[in-house]
Amino acid sequence: MKNAVTRLALNLVGRSDQVRPPDPAALLSALPVPVALLDVANRFRSLNHAAEQFLGISASQARGLALSELVPQDSPLFLLIDQVRRHEVTVADHDMTLDGPRLRKQGITVQGTPLPEEPGAVLLTFLDASAARALDRQLSFRSAARSVTGMAAILAHEVKNPLSGIRGAAQLLEASVAEPDRELTVLIRDEADRIKDLVERMEVFGEKPFERGAVNIHRVLEHVRRLAQSGFAAAIRFSEVYDPSLPAVFGNRDQLVQVMLNLVKNAAEAVTDGEVANPEINLTTAFQHGVRLAVPGSDRRMELPLVVSVRDNGPGIPEDIRANLFDPFVTSRPAGSGLGLALVAKIVADHGGLIEVDSRPGRTEFRLHLPVFTDDAG
Ligand SMILES: Nc1ncnc2c1ncn2[C@@H]1O[C@H](COP(=O)(O)OP(=O)(O)OP(=O)(O)O)[C@@H](O)[C@H]1O
Ligand SMILES: [Mg+2]
Image 1 (cartoon, helix red, strand yellow):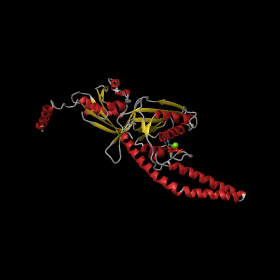
Image 2 (tube, protein in one colour):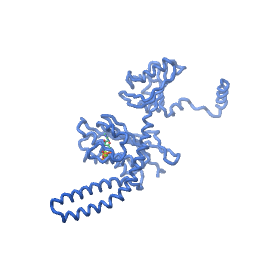
Image 3 (cartoon, helix red, strand yellow):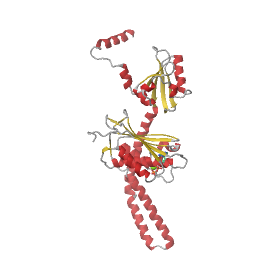
């Protein structure tokens, strides 16, 4: 065995004049898994690029910083680190919550590894299982959107036509029935109108081709904000954090307006339920590398570097509807149709994008990941 290892080492050395082995530091920084090295006093010695993003702190800020600045001292993470040092073995813990002033993560798998060359140092790797789950959920949203597509076509055919017959008949009756019965014919007409409205809202789910081009998402957001502030969100404070260098989205402007409007409307409804002291909606855009989605039926991966988020300080999404949030007709509001988020899911899926949700009391965020416009995008 030892021979084999030596041979391998010699092989590498022997070939090094032709192919330089990659620099370990460069490999570590390219690794898409967050890795952080702690010294014996639990201070950060180094972070790779993924760990910077995961912990929300740059490597230079982190150097020398105590872990307890990010994670409270009573966190099970410290227990794990102690075990690594005490037994000099790798220890893993699943479904950990990292909850500090600057960091909030759930469902994290943390692995701690001792470094024999550096007594007391511990290498931590973090795996965010919730990211994988979010992707899972997104894929199921897509199938929810598809099932609505079929239903929309059926409804349009099978309901709308007979409905206009019913409405017409009620109108004819209205003219000839006695006064006490007129109320009933009006009821039939009004209810028929209500069903027609609903069917028309469903029709937008139908499979229609749409044009895509370069869309300035900031213009879309500002348009939606103006609409909201001159109507349903007049009493709500808006704040924006826009990345002005953000490139254009590859999308359809009107559909993106619809998406943002639905999200902002939900946020506005959430913060005006009377319990929220300072109702606020925040709109954020950012550029983020590394989010890719497989294109169905091919081995291509689509980059989704544009992140657009709508955040509110409302009470959060009710627990009982979270699992089916994007399904049609799921609503907690007496007057809601439950079609808003189903439509959002459909449009985002049609754009090849992703949608993620984080929600807890006081902070609900819907994050869209969208493709960028390039000259050969079409
Ligand atoms: N920002 C939010 N905060 C809290 N709950 C939310 C938020 N956004 C959506 N929800 C919940 O998700 C449900 C579904 O939203 P969706 O937009 O699909 O339907 P709706 O708003 O109830 O009806 P419609 O959009 O058709 O008027 C809402 O009823 C609400 O319970
Ligand atoms: Mg809604």
